[in-house]
Length: 336
Ligand code: UDP
Image 1: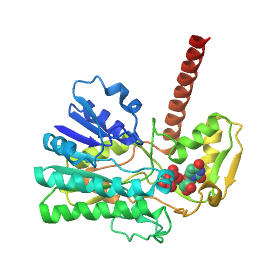
Image 2: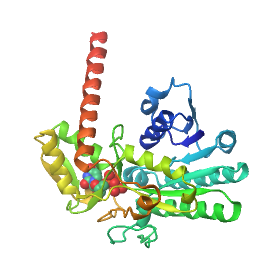
Image 3: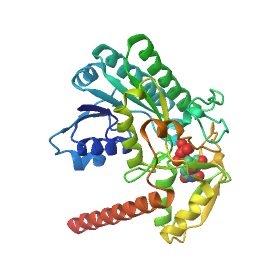
Image 4: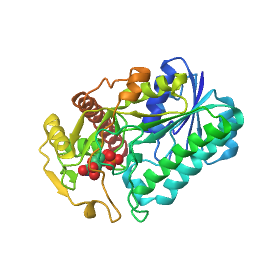
């Protein structure tokens, strides 16, 4: 099969490309490198079945050709990370709304299947545990920046089902829950890469709020396999699926665990939300997926528990830091 992966130079996208190539498929990536990076796909660039176009999904002319040439689209291009969403609300909404609309319109014109990656954010501040796919979505006011992400992704989901209903586009919607793994950057606020880097540098580990809020983290390898399995399952069309892990941890316990596993001397520092984010911030207290629906359809179960995920990411971060410091030393040797 020939797949178009939008956002394929991002953290999850790059792992998806790797997986698809390993399965013998052909992959064409479109990425504007806003939060994605060529570094993420450096190791794939010479692969004979891999191609990248650096452009935005908002460009309908470029996208038309790419959608036409593909057998199916994995639509991952989106604004990611709470920090970015709060700082750049216009870009967030443009990318999420216009990007998805462009893809769906072209898929309708050329008769292609689309898998949309949505997010657990769409459940909003509903306090139910775990979240089932047909649970209510509860959002805060439109004056609170964070909610623009949830609202925009929820509209994406509505749009996907609308294009199925009116234009017969075979769509699958997936809601990803806090995906982690090698190559994820903490630059846009993601907690695990941030805590691990802080711990490895023996800097304060920054827990926002009370640290009693909780999340369930999924290994990226489990996520990409689930996306591909769903894309190959005819019964998945027209449905929405949680993709995640149902092992939940409080952010305070996560900080302690990472400190212990890295042997760090870091202090755990509690930072009030108002200090961490200028204003307009509201956190979700708890978040955990019900995996009943995806398990029933494709037999999905996450293979990596939190400890193995953390071990893998810590090892990867240590290797990257060692590699970066050798590069800096080499540069300095060249200069002197
Ligand atoms: N968080 C934290 N310190 C950080 C970054 C994040 O305490 O340096 C918290 C954040 O407030 C949230 C949780 O960790 O409660 C997960 O944050 P992330 O941005 O990774 O994902 P979210 O679930 O908020 O989308």
